[in-house]
Length: 240
Ligand SMILES: N[C@@H](CCC(=O)N[C@@H](CS)C(=O)NCC(=O)O)C(=O)O
Image 1 (cartoon, rainbow, N blue to C red):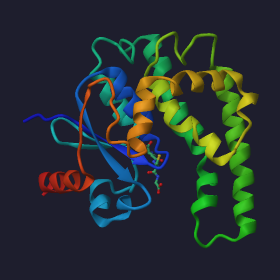
Image 2 (cartoon, helix red, strand yellow):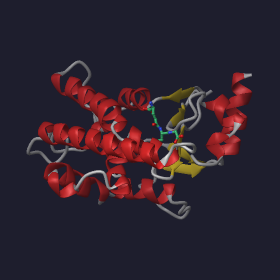
Image 3 (cartoon, rainbow, N blue to C red):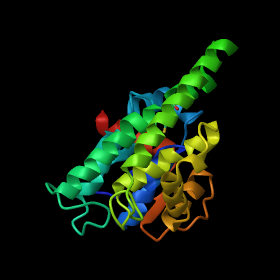
Image 4 (cartoon, rainbow, N blue to C red):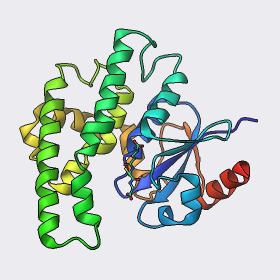
């Protein structure tokens, strides 16, 4: 039996917003479930859903629970025969997109790790927090410089149409503002890309859902918000 897939919208500031943007760009039916990453995500029921206690998570159309941004991006790529947000597999363009997504999902995203730890580590001293912040800012600056050098003259990361790489970028790039990690003006290509995607209705919809605006309208592909409790109950029943 197949059903409409359900994807998480983790808040606050979840990287999931990037892949919500990708679902909108792809345009195929999907549903969303909002996940309070500081609340409901900490429960035992959620831990059974994703043992790493993270978002994003996808419940696929055949009821499987799929975690990890890369895996979910590849799942979307496999369902994009019209190549709206990806490229024909086994082409140089597809290889470059995978390379870009891998960089964004590992090095670029990971650079923010010390900054999140500085914020969340309950028993850290102020001196430890300051050390973490220093390393975090340095890592973020290095990865921004590297990404800046990887961006060409096109409107998006891999040409003049947005792809899964731009989607993954968009969910994480905004963390710079929250942590005041670097001066965005120092990376003009990254800033231009952010401005372009952040003005896109698909990304704006992703952020509206994240912010709890249940009246937000996407392009019609999103078929409904499912309470997380229902998702946890139904997936637990399937796993049992
Ligand atoms: N390896 C995972 C990492 C995802 C990740 O870092 N998720 C963050 C939110 S964007 C999270 O859930 N962090 C746990 C927390 O906030 O405690 C992936 O690529 O999907």
